[in-house]
Image 1 (spheres, rainbow, N blue to C red):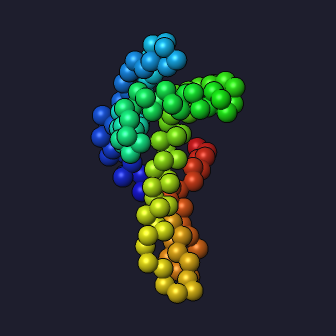
Image 2: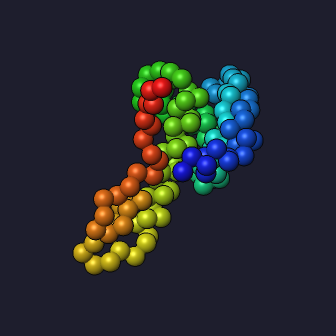
Image 3: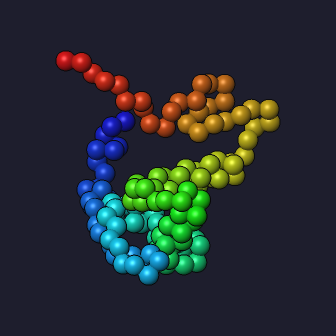
Length: 124
């Protein structure tokens, strides 16, 4: 399983800084290239630019929480939640056999397998 992750293109996890205008203030945000790509996909879906989407997220979290702690991490988690929602929507579109429930990573009649194996500490 790890081989799939280890063979990821290093460009995907290389970080890149971009300048974004939030509330008329230019700020620099450093994220992995893959996160920038997902944010661009989300922005396209919303019919706006990536910078406009990021500014909108900032305004909405500020209105909801009153502060914006660790905004870069918020954007990373938002990207992962977006991908998870896309996966769940695709699964809903799959035909389901009558009376059986199929869950992510599972087969009818079996215990669903996690998508990612849990991390286990190894003592040496």
